[in-house]
Image 1: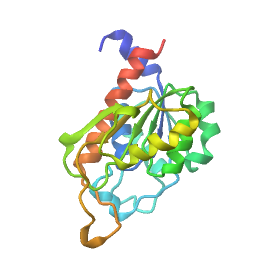
Image 2: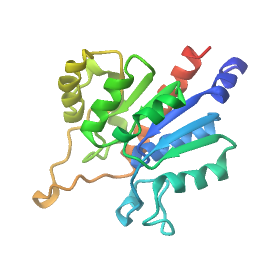
Image 3: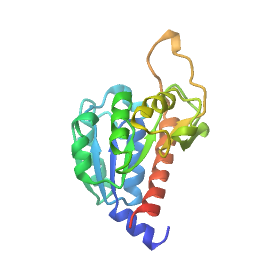
Amino acid sequence: MGEDCIEKIRKSRIVICGLGGVGGFVLEALARLGVGSFFLVDDDRFEITNLNRQILSNFNNIGKLKVEEAIDRLKLISDCDVLVSKNKVQDAILEIEKFEPNVIIDAIDDLEAKILLIGHFYKKSNIVVSAGAGNRIDPTMVTYADLSKTSNCSIARILRKRLKSFGIVSGIDVVFSKETPKKEFNNSNIVSSAVFVPMAFGALISYLTYRLICNSID
């Protein structure tokens, strides 16, 4: 990495929106990388169904707020500074702006919130977006591309279409899977997930964030 890059990492200010399957792995990786300051946004609580894929979840924190458990996790592995918001992303826009982040990581499932977040910060901050990890099982199919060049991902397709109204057609790294989603089990509408894929998403998003930090921060 070199001393200059390590110093940039220590001075970096990273926002992570969503601390579920993908966002939890991103937080773990970037904290261990040495990121100096985090602002974490999530209004959700852990459920028993999170145990199969969310690194921040365990039997002892079911029902507890994800941002509060994230603070406890960080204390065990990092000396970073951390601020949190218990609001929904769409209600935390001003808080995020006040934090003055170098990189914003969109790891949320809510499409309307994703569109609002990206639309608001497109020209103000670097953004790395997590597209659809659900109903997939092969981590070797996880990749990234500019928003304009994503493929085989319904979430990315919707983002491309909706973000055009903001004049946004490219210039955002999107992590997605080229794997064809598995059909719903027994015609259920529940989106299933195995740990391999959100873990791979988290690792790749963390790498892209590291690259943005070391290439763009003075």
